[in-house]
Length: 265
Image (tube, rainbow, N blue to C red):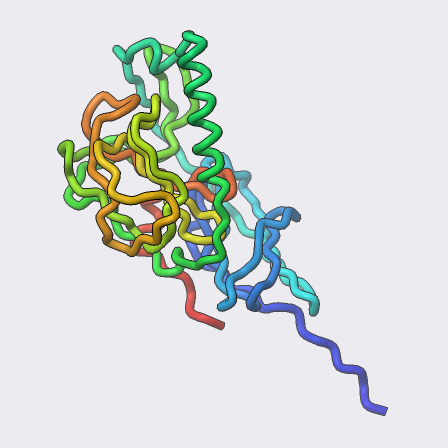
């Protein structure tokens, strides 16, 4: 009698900078379920592409698994630690550090709720596979990702962005294709803010903009003008604060510049 046939588990290919604030590009079976440390974090694209981000404070080991009806494949990945700067900024207005006015606190809470909805976008796209370009040409990096912030002498949460200094009005361009998940001006801390969903919950953010040239729900292409550098919100000089998040994890956007996902399996 012929032996029974068993379907093979999915293949799994990973590549990327395996450091805190880094990421892994993945390839596997189309629509395979993606798990990180046993938690379902979405599904691969129709081409089998997926993305996993490592938080600024990621543990030293992360288990990435893919699952299909035929089986499961997993890989335990080491994530290297990084050292981060300590940045002290004094002379900020008190309401930009420790706001007390009830009306202002209510406004900040409402803004935070709207931003959270933007960061929760989970479009079925894979715009991340070609990596990013820089959103501002010729800018000077004044603050690196992940530094501890001490504002007016008070320790605050780390700075999860990269600050790109440039004159007010300097063009800001989309670093990759995506869909605008949030676009508002006049936010208390952020000034003009744009969020772009590049697929599977990978969201890039652009803070302190003096002008916004796109609207929520608009599809943008790599290199497209989306706004202009400003000094709005909590900012001591004209610059773009560029951030990147994946499923609540804070990533270093500079690591995406020039990166590319592996080819199809």
